[in-house]
Image (cartoon, rainbow, N blue to C red; front, side):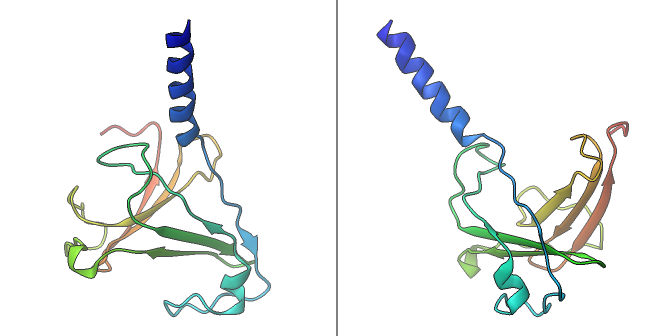
Length: 144
């Protein structure tokens, strides 16, 4: 009985780390300044997303490095800012063509927008430390 309770407790702790988190975008009356700094009034209004989990190589465990993401929108655009902290000498970058495939071991920041709210279709936007940019439409019916 005690062994079963301990197993249940460990399972619940594991699931707690995998719960889905949300970040609600805040509408801004003025667009944020796009200059790589997040000190203008528009960015200061945006809530911060923190406490991310790893996707690879160890899915579900807390990220070993700090990342902060903010999202704003206005009548014309959606604005996403990310601060990704790492030792500059450890940043892995690869130079490819726009929309080029990235190696698994290259660093990148990616956002998926579930614009249909069906967890199957939407859009992906990706940028690397070498400023290689990728955008893609995600379609549940697409074949690999």
